[in-house]
Image (cartoon, rainbow, N blue to C red):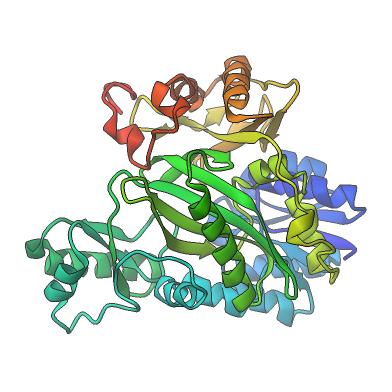
Length: 451
């Protein structure tokens, strides 16, 4: 690998450029017209404008990205997360063009992107799953009786869904048929597929996950994470390792995740996501993400392994070079997603010019940001400004360090989610790890009156 094109923007593009430069790999940033002058463009060795602001005409434009690779002589493409990262058609086009795709095989992306097929694969690998349909729901059948057998509440999910989309809750038998029809219509519109399936709903669930990595011959896990602090199924704060899990469940979750990776002959970085039911003390498979996760830095913090560097090594044809026994886990880490949004006004996006951006530092503090002071946040893309990652020797000390680090962050000119982060880390429930995926919406007074 001599020259890497990064098919992404913002903080993840900066993150990949930095890793590549440390490895002596030249970098190409692709940018939309709206992203001219971005940190990614400034740090890359070369940049190519691939289209106007709308993502469909730039970052999601297959031919524009491939043309940029050809024009610059790039021999590899890293998709980051989001955008084209789990697009099997694009991955095939990359490899068909003779380029290195930094990610798993396109067939693996297809398998895990189909949630009902992924569920079946998980069952075959011994991964625990929630009660539900084993495959796609046959809507011509007696779906009310099928729902009765699973029990209420339950959820109907889009088979091709992801990112928290395409999910509808069903409380009773009377709601089954109508909710399924609505979910099918939403799935068709969002994913061009109306296939759905049923799954038991867990009240006050926690969202936990395992970071796996493989080279096609050897597979390991890099520990687990907790992503339970969410807002409308979008992650807000993550931590590693997941606190308060029974150790037998933690080990089962890790071991079966590696087995799923082995059975699918997985190559590169992936994440197996689970729900944890504290009341029943059960874990259950949700999905497998076939890409680098936003929250990968906290796994790096507790293992000392650079995941992006590992992605580039394995994509270049190198072997893992270590086994599970070689990986040591140390300390505790948090990641705070800092978005250009107003949490006290229904999380309204806050585009505009960043007048000031002061980030914290000190021991155990890392800031992965895609923006600097004086730059403008555009309204066309995800509102993530960057991530604050904090590590210390245990959860108590890491939480204290996080509170200090968040207090030092100053952002002006736009609204940000920093004030909400400060409130969250001060909560007794968060300190005691008693939060859950719907916690933010459930606690009165946590958000402003208009949120």
